Length: 59
Image 1 (cartoon, rainbow, N blue to C red):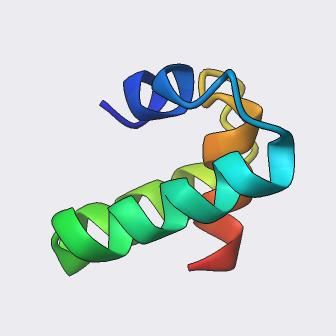
Image 2 (cartoon, rainbow, N blue to C red; image 1 turned 180 degrees about the vertical axis):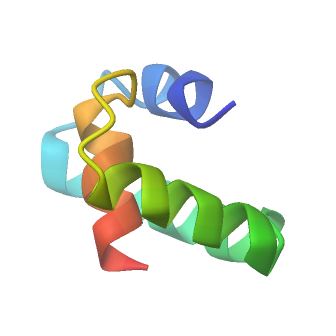
């Protein structure tokens, strides 16, 4: 689901896309989902879109 969000924002420059992904995650994802995403990003999961991984590190 997170990769889909990142793909929807692919037309934006990286900084704006990451900022908007963070806002979406804060607004719509519950804390458990955010923690799971953060763990995946911290583990270097290569299935995550790079912008999604960057957003996870900012949460």
